[in-house]
Image (cartoon, rainbow, N blue to C red; front, top):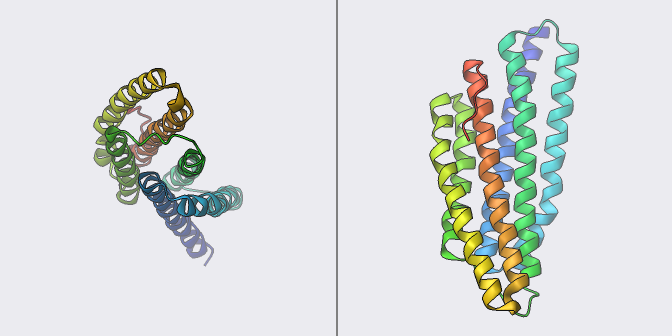
Length: 219
């Protein structure tokens, strides 16, 4: 009976991490759509919803610590799962913060005298970051190290797009000082998307550790 309860607790941690991942994925998708449409109402909702993501994150951490403290002995594979769940939850919480940051920039940008439309490359960067998050969560669900490794190529593309966008936005701000604050908004969005991609590769590294017991850098 005790081991059955333990097995349910382990399964619950996995399920709730995936639920948190879905919440974060939704926040990021909605923040990108808010940016594309300058939807300040949607941006406000994303900002409000960030507290729910934080709540799930704290619950996962507390339950993982309680499980490790109360269930002894714990098999090596479950110990890896518990440490990976905690680490991935932390990465997801930060991605939620980046979605929140993009939403805040949408609200501030619409108050500027001059809007700076998102450059075309920002859409590719946003879609890649979102795709990487989805891939990293799918890799966790399947415990698929090969799928986790596939994140490397996308991360390199995101880094290249970041360089292009930074150069273009800085040039635009220099050419027209009225666009300076709007360019800063867009630079912050670019930074949030680049960090999202990095966090997705971090999740991929945790999946590789979970699947192979090997610590490996993929970005």
